[in-house]
Amino acid sequence: MMKSTEEVTRLPRVDVESAAIRAEGLRVVRGNRVVLDDFDLTVRRGTVTGLLGPNGSGKTTLMRAVVGVQKVAGGRIEVLGRPAGSAELRYRIGYFTQSPSVYRDITVRQNLQYFAAVLGAPRSDVDRTIEQVDLGSHADDLVSRLSGGETSRVSLAVALLGEPELLVLDEPTVGLDPVLRRDLWTLFRELADAGATLLVSSHVMDEAERCQRLLLLREGRLLADDTVPELYARTDTSGTEEAFLHLIDRETHREVAQ
Amino acid sequence: MSPRITVATAHRVLNQLRHDRRTLALLLFMPSILLVLLWWIYDGGPVFDRIGPALLALFPFISMFLVTSIATLRERTSGTLERLLAMPTGKLDFLLGYGLAFGLMAALQATIAAGVSIGLLDLDVAGPTWQLVTVAVLDALLGVALGLFVSAFAATEFQVVQFMPALVLPQFLLCGLLVARDDMPAVLSAISDALPLSYAVDAMREVQVNPTPEVWGYAGIIAAFAVGLLALGAATLRRRTA
Image (cartoon, rainbow over all chains, first blue to last red; front, side, top):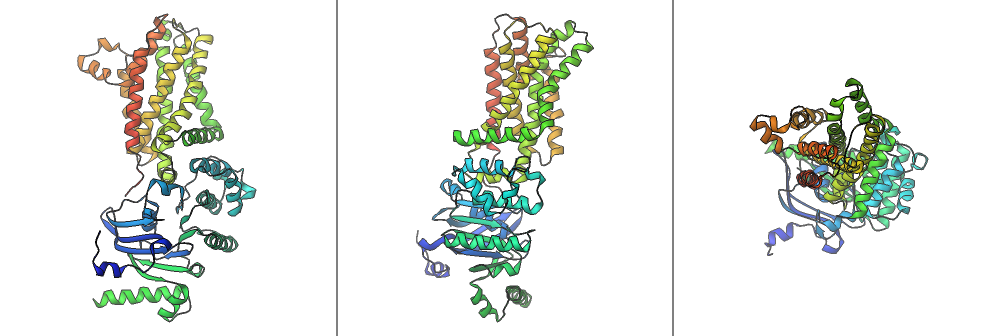
């Protein structure tokens, strides 16, 4: 397919090999609301990329499009070199949704055994992921007996099964205490160092500093796609929260001026 | 589809039941208790002999319809269905996994109910008991298929429970249990011909009166309805949603 020069230059300059996610002109409509329109994005392999933005900015919709469970109205989205939603990708992506998608009426271990069987992941993955989310002492408890934070970690453990190349995590640290949050962010970094790509949404701004790259989404548009130091330099700030407020305010002023 | 995922799904559904002792007990023993009650009401007379087998067809259909429709609705609303479909699960793996698990439960349920009716309550059945149980299992699978299908049209558990009077009671009224199908007004008789439960009751009656019953024709019709409903159910499972 031929492309106009304008279109080519508009794309972020990352070669195809190193891109885990590439979206071009993506358009998603939910109900009668256009959530994403003419949306471009590139996420590099082997990085932890933070996806930040106010409620309703399109974070979850974007993640659903990456995983391939979202109906897309236009544009292209490629994940690990394949069109999003390809059958082959179903083994290679781990997906964590905001509300825990696990069975509450069976035990933690039974949940993991089931999803491991579905993925064809080795049996040893069950114990490994239980340890990774620190649920060893609850492995044989029914999920319905666990607290909200523990339930959400069961769901995270499922996403870690089969050592996926891409992890799409929608607010994985909500409702967790500071120690657990720190441990999970350490785990995310270790996974990325081992070669996995992580796309992690959050609205806790101090978590953003743990990401190698930050995306700020507002009303379906990217306000920032920077490393943390780049972001600080560009906004002349020293904290992510401050930087984002700065960018959002500037955007609001621009809209008002128009 | 993959046998590995189908079997894992059936195993998981059975695990869920195993942890839910009350549902398990109700599923397995309620039909037998109701049959005993019926026997008592009619003092074990000819009426019991006439409607007993039809109820053996009805119970597995109703109970499996209810548990499947609610279980599937829970999969849809809790996000587990979406997660499974984002994984390598095929639609058939999901549907057959449920069919396998609840089919097994139905076999147990029907064996207990048939054992109680014939052994304890002296229900007169001319044909072989295993055919009675086989027809009951097919009826249960019909209930599973219908439950999977209607769960797509319900947004809440309140709604899904309302499908039971809407879809099951008319079939019960027209299946020939209250009035023989041939004696109904022509229109109702024609409608009755188009409903799967009618054939389930016909099959049971055949086993009851005939020492060498010809049930395979009926069984084929019931199975065809179940497969058709499963195909419709599969069409309602979407990997991508708005």
